[in-house]
Length: 419
Ligand SMILES: NC(=O)c1ccc[n+]([C@@H]2O[C@H](COP(=O)([O-])OP(=O)(O)OC[C@H]3O[C@@H](n4cnc5c(N)ncnc54)[C@H](O)[C@@H]3O)[C@@H](O)[C@H]2O)c1
Image (cartoon, rainbow, N blue to C red; front, side, top):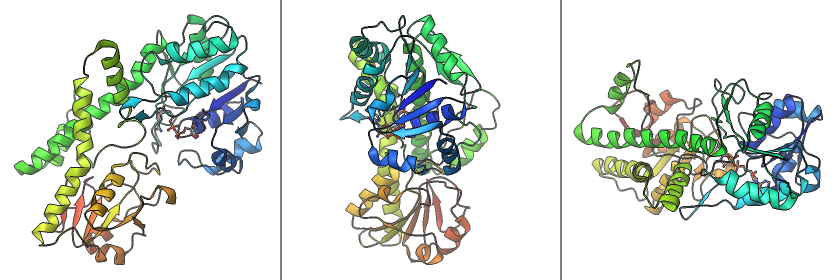
């Protein structure tokens, strides 16, 4: 049985590890976070897309073992690296990839395959990971061992386009490496899409995320102008979406969050600036518009309270949704946190409902509550920030004094404004 090691057991690494175990590999899910490893070993998944039942089945079957001990990595056939790639003051921080490569390097043997999955700028696999593995092993990537890049396309909460169903782009530093990387993923997903080198695969991921980032910024800016012009932007978006070709629906919101959109496009613009000395203007503009959205939401709320001769200070505001996205518990880079901190700074009492996020993700100063009639009616304003399916929107509409709906999910009423 082939041994697979997955470095990083987060939103990306855990689904890959579980899927590989289900496909018949012997899998070590390696993570430096001992608490996470213990939780996983106890059968507790922290990701909505991986149920405790699914995790329990691969644990009990003996195919999946979480570990924080690098000694468990010895003798691997395939290593997948899925560690964070954050920005530090606007600059890509590849230290996690460097450290993961250093952990894998002593265990590289002839014929093994190493695959980078973390989102990163074009060139990282060949310029960063290959030299680290080659120096430690004394072998040449693409010749004596295999190396490639395959971006993750996971869409948390998406029940249709699951990990298995979503086509996976694969690449290698040589033809032999491409064959090895593709051969591995062909056993995990329905369709693989080979490209000619890791750089194209790295750029593919950044193109996909930049495309979304830019289009969300476009509708966000349009929403702000349409409001000032007295035009219903949501109706225009619905109408435009009936065009069967040449248009793709994106909807406005309180800003972008998660580990991808607020970060990945900046990896690309950083690379363009660093290598070519030029600005990637679309990315900069999209960052500017999307980062401004929480300010805009707060300014709309201030204006609405002002109409009722109320100041924000001392008012109770109920936030619906702390996650960055519908039906997920991922609150990383969530615009809700920015909005909450701005309202707290203005002296509001901020309460929030979110059935998905863990307590640790509730921003400091915010009181977590349930969505019940008393909570809704006692708030001076309700801000709908996430379109979780669980929210009882009829209750919100019937009990709230005032609602600002940034997702267009509450039915129209006199007490409801939309973004
Ligand atoms: N979350 C998504 O939806 C998504 C989608 C596509 C791509 N990505 C990309 O995938 C990568 C991972 O993202 P994520 O969301 O899974 O992050 P995450 O924070 O959920 O998980 C990363 C895990 O790696 C662990 N880790 C950090 N350094 C390590 C090391 N040296 N050795 C072993 N483990 C280490 C952390 O403890 C953590 O558990 C990022 O590059 C991200 O941009 C994320």
